[in-house]
Length: 415
Image (tube, rainbow, N blue to C red):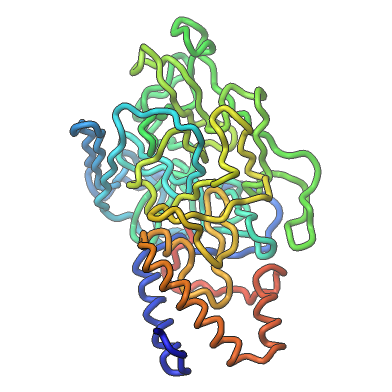
């Protein structure tokens, strides 16, 4: 049906595919060899918003619909800056979440936006920064290991101008008068519809008269050193997401950085997420079923190894990662390297459609089969073009750290 590719048609096809990929504006992958965290040098918030903050939160049928222009209601750092080349610009955010969310039987690892703040700015804790070696070692953007130009509200900007929070949104928290003397005000909504609070809650989650405390995460740094070899060396110091593990009972919150509790807005109780002063700060797992409006960058459903709400806790350091699934047809996405929670693994050499693009296209079974056939034809043609020695070199590019270091083109989205 497809025939054999020629040396002329193959480059044309690939150029078209690259254009399609760029149009999707995915979170790209940048590779580094840094293995130690560094001071996080935050950009002072000296710049007033260029436009007025505009946000509306309305109940429409069974949904809570949040619309905003993405402009924060507080001062920001200077953008562009030495770590971030992008300018803040007006957006057209719209998110629909259930007004009566339910706890799901399994948690879902986020990839992309966890939720949205009450000022309409998204919470997006991950970054497309990975170790140049064994796949899956994603850098924690707040570790300071990679300079990302983050401002005092732990936020920065994507190439399309989207301002987004990677950590505690200091400017927003000041605007809602966050205080250690009272339960946090509502600061946002998660993609599954549950509320988001920051730091302070009741010591006894079912007693609003109990002491106000700074709630602590139950994630801890692992003891000892990383495995080395193709993986990073050095001690587990928080440089990477996989430096942390969930230790049940070591803090106040569950693996989703949340708990069932009474809050000022929910006096009869609700499940609620809390931003914490310790990692992960912004949660990396959803307890409920996330709205697809937050999945524009793809979500990995953890398949047979999914974290159960009442079972084994998810651990970011777990090396057994599932194969990504296509939500449109429930089939595994083919051919790429494993996807880690909160980020994307690069496509293998010769892969014509990266997994994030296959996911975002929401293919039918017929389209999926056609693309698998197309990929098979490309693989066959590559084998005919290259010598066996070149094929061996190609196959060894991804896992062993010898991949040529990518150069950053202007405006490259690494955030």
